[in-house]
Image 1 (cartoon, rainbow over the protein chains, first blue to last red):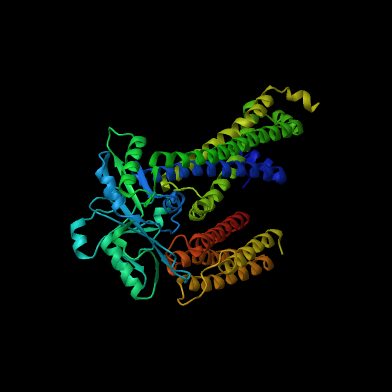
Image 2: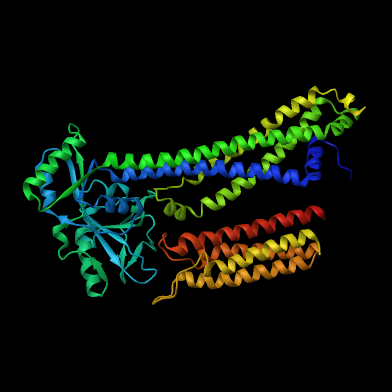
Length: 408
Length: 131
C-alpha cells in the first residue's frame, strides 16, 4: 500500500534524508532540555533544602561552646558525626533570664567504628518534655508518656536504615518510635533519643566493647541549647542578655558562642543564591544558543531547499502546506530532542540525588514525583514552543517566496 | 552482519561490561570485613547479569536475523529488569543512604538496567518497523 504524501510524511522524509543535520539539531534540543530541566530541579531542590534547614532549626538562638560554630553547622547541614560539650548548668543560667519562650538542650554522641558498614552515626539525646524542635518532625504520631514508660523514645532520621520498624545499633536492635520526615539536610542521618536511652546505649556499648567519644557523665553535659525567644525580644538583645547571664554565673570558666538562627540560614541562602545565579545563567545561555542555532539552521537549509519547495509548489502544494512541512520538522526535532533530554536528565538526577547533595555541600531535597513530572512537562512545552518559534521566520519567508521564479 | 546490528550489539556489550565491572570499580560495593554485607552478594549477581548482557550483545552483533534479535531483546529486557531489581528489591545494598554502595553503586546499576531495557525496546521497535 502506498503512503499518502502528507506534510508529516514529507517532514519525516526530509529529516531522514539529512541524518547528520537531524542528529545535530536533536543533540542541540537534547542539551537544552537537559540543562533546562536540571536547572529547574536544582533550583527547587536547593530552595527546599534551605527551607528544610530553616524548619529544622526552629529556634531563634543556638548556644554552642565557643569555637564550635562550624562543627555544629556540619552536624546540622551534612550530618557529619561530631561532638562537643559544655556544662548543663549553662541551660539553668539561660532559664534565669526573662527573654525566652522555650529552652531545650541536646547532647551529641558519636559512634566510632572501623567496620565499613557500621557507619559512624550521630546520636543526639534530647529532652522530650522541653523539646519544641524534634517532635514536630516526626512522621507518625506517638504518645510520649507511653513510650517513655516502655523503652524510651527513638527517632530515626530519613536516611537511617529502618527495617520492620527496628534499627540495628551496636549489636542490639531498638524499636523506632517514629521516623522523621525528610529535610535534605544532615539531620536525615541522625538518630534522636531521650537522655535516659542515650545513657543506656552509652553504657551498653561500653560493656560490649564499642568505642564512644564522650566525657564521663552524660547527664551533666549538653552540646547545643536551643532557645525560642519571647515575641517582645529581639535576637540581638536576647543574645546579649544570655551572654551576660552565663558570664555572671561562670566567668571565663565556660565560654559560649551564640548562633542566631536567622543569620545561620541567611549565610546559607547567600551561598545558595550564588550557585543559583550560575545555574540560571548557564540555562539561559544554553537556551539562547539553542534557539538561535535552530533558527539559523532552518534558515540556511531553506536557502538550499528553494528548488525542492518550488517543485512542491508546482505540484500543487500551497504556501500553507509548505509552512506546515517546516513546522512539522521543527515539531519532530523538538519532540525527539526534548524527550531524550528529559529522560537522561531524570535518569541521572533522581537516582543520584544523595550523591549530588553530598558533593555540592548544601541541603538538597528533590521534590515529589508530581513536582518533577510538572517540571518535565513545562520543559517539554518550552522546548517545543521554542523549536516551532525558531522555525517561524523560515516558514514566513517560504510563504512570501515567488517560488515559480526560483525554478526557472 | 548488518551495521545496525553491530551498533546495537556494541551498546549491549558496553552496558554489560559496565554492569559487571561497576560494583568492583567506580561504583564499588563495601569490602568484606568482619561482616559480609548484602551489597557483596548484589555485586556477585550483577557480575553474572553483566556477563550475560555482554554475551547477548556479541551474539546480536554477529547474527542479523530479525526474529533472533527480537528474541534476544526479550532476554535482554529481562536481564535489564534483573539489574534493577537485584540492588533495589531482591537482595539490596547497605541501609545507610550515605554509604557508597547505596549512594553510587545502586543508582548506577539502576541507570544501566533502565538503559538496557530502553535500548532493547528501541531496537525491537526498529526491527518491527522494518519487517
